[in-house]
Image (tube, helix red, strand yellow):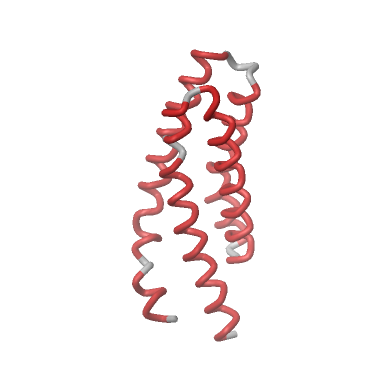
Length: 124
């Protein structure tokens, strides 16, 4: 288990950069949805909710500093991201495809946090 965790420690190093990059993509998508449908459209509002959820993640994971909270937050964000991607698809397929980087990142981060959680309970 230690070898796997050591191999994934780079995730902590690049997480802020990835987080900023994903935020830029989400702002771009929100801008496109706003230009196409306006701010009252449910897809725009759900996108704002997702953006807030993504931005709150570092706050509540740092505040609670527990792997359980982090994993729950990851799974909630993954569900919201997949739901948003599916809602975007009828509006614009290309915009929906821009959600894949976030889906991949959240899956990777969830695996990492899950392994940290397993390691915590194995050693604890």
